[in-house]
Length: 136
Image (cartoon, rainbow, N blue to C red):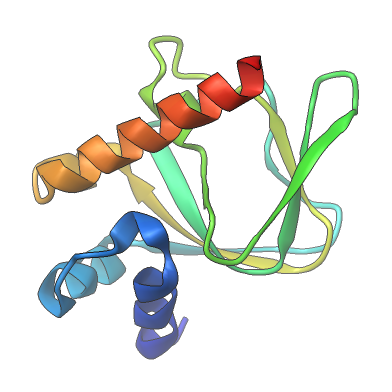
């Protein structure tokens, strides 16, 4: 993936707001670009979270329950995988499927924690907000 596309995606995501170009560049270098086709499963409910989370760069993903109910659709600029990554169980809590071709930037939590403690706090806050929203 082109580095300028990665940097733009990072700058446009609210999770990374307030980070300088050096920090964003470090994030971009540590990211793994992943591509998914229509109907591909990105995460399966109950799968090992493997300590990773991702940013949707392009495409749309449906969030579904184990029973197949669509909870919402996520698109470019949104973070995925943070809930399972920070949970004690370390498991994916929902299934995410691509409803159109999608590109993600994925990171391992351990790569982020040492270089940006403030980002870790923002990621945990996001996860807790999602858990709260899901339970209401």
